[in-house]
Length: 181
Image 1: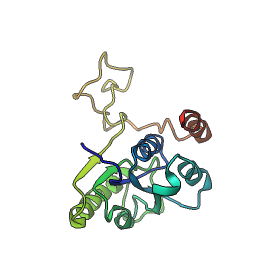
Image 2: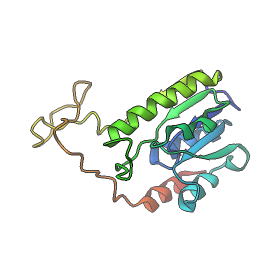
Image 3: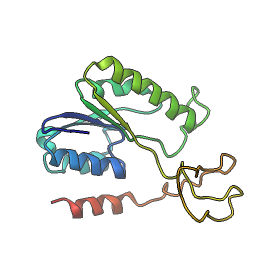
Image 4: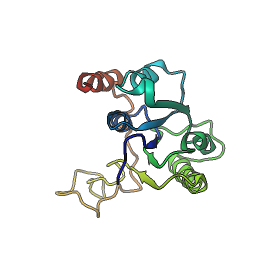
C-alpha cells in the first residue's frame, strides 16, 4: 500500500480510537483526510481531530452514519484510499430497517464498497475488524483457549458484553493528545 503525500484518503468512524490514530498518521504523512463521524455536533470528538497537526490544512470532516450508508458517498468522492473503520457499539433500536448491528454493518459495508467502485478514484479499500469477532473464548463461553489464531471466532450463541461502552473517552483522547507531537 503506497499512500503518497497529498493522497486523498477517507477514514470512516474517525472519532474512534483506532481511526483517530490513523487520521493522525495520515496527516503526518501529508495526506488530505476525509474523516467521517456520526455527528459533527459532538465538539469533543471533532475537537480532537481538528487539533491534530496538519488538520487545519488537510482534514475535511463529513457526517455519516452506518445506519444510513448513503451518507458516506460525499466523503469517498475523490479519494484514492478508503479505510472502513466505523462500526456502531450498540444497535440503534429506532432502526426499522435492521434487526441488529450485524445486519446494519454488513449492509453498510456492501453499499460503501459499491460507492467506492462507482467513484472511479478509489484504488484500494482497507476494511478493519475488531478482535471481538475473532475471540479466544471457549465454545461454552467459560474461559479462554490457549492460543488465538484464524480458527478463533466468537461463538454466535454468546452475547457480546460491549466491554468498551463505558470506556472513558476522555482518557483515550488524553492519551492521543499526550502522544501527539
